[in-house]
Image (cartoon, rainbow, N blue to C red; front, side):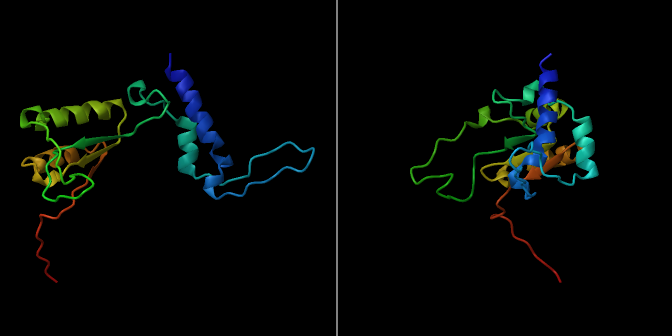
Length: 165
């Protein structure tokens, strides 16, 4: 029942995008006594299709403010081989005990569940994700599914590359 108003709101938002000043489209001011009209903006065929066939997001992925979330961020570890002030202040931070971290199977199960609800992107972050011993297995399983785009966000400070030209 709640999906219908959400669908209507999404369509309304997509239709109103032509009036957006941030698009770079010209904003026209009506002459005195004329009704206001939105500036004409070219809309790609892909966008036209999305406007016409927009499906509502899962209520599970819509927060209390009506924002619809399309990606999932999974932190594979809090550990890092750098001590940047942003993440690790001088006094340190308490790390989650190993027993409380998600297992490989739990991460993959969560990813599958969120994809079924409408997630189309998964970001793997950390600390430094490459520190996690099973990171190759996790990335491999996520990429094999092919149902969504996954991003991997390491800082790569621990890798040594040999380039041959």
